[in-house]
Image 1 (cartoon, helix red, strand yellow):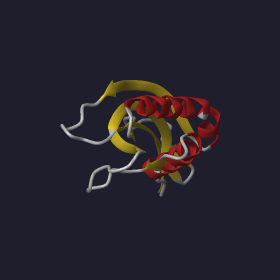
Image 2 (cartoon, rainbow, N blue to C red):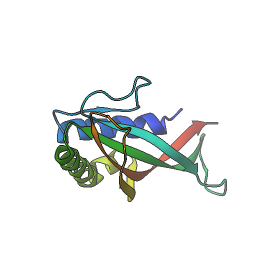
Image 3 (cartoon, rainbow, N blue to C red):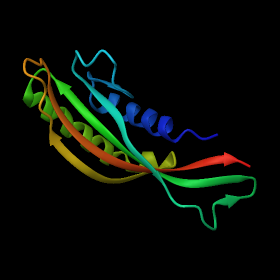
Length: 140
């Protein structure tokens, strides 16, 4: 069984932890909310291609899976939130060949936005989305 979501999030966590140190990168948002400067990844959508010819190879079935991941960058200051959002965007773009070597195809950046937090929130937040594709496989 392949693990498309975990495979992509794990590779991205490694890339972002290196490029955006000392910020930590999380593969999901805590139920308790965000209380420290960090990067949080969230799965926004997942789409597979419709069944058709060529989806079986020997004893495996496969399909191309497209995942849209949202990246939220939190920091104590607005300028630092911008700085680390830029670092994260660049790190993902620069790692295109590394990702490809892991079977992950970097697609387009589909959105970037300022996200208003609740009144009195301590952290500033920048958000952007990237799309990725990976083949999901299953034994027959």
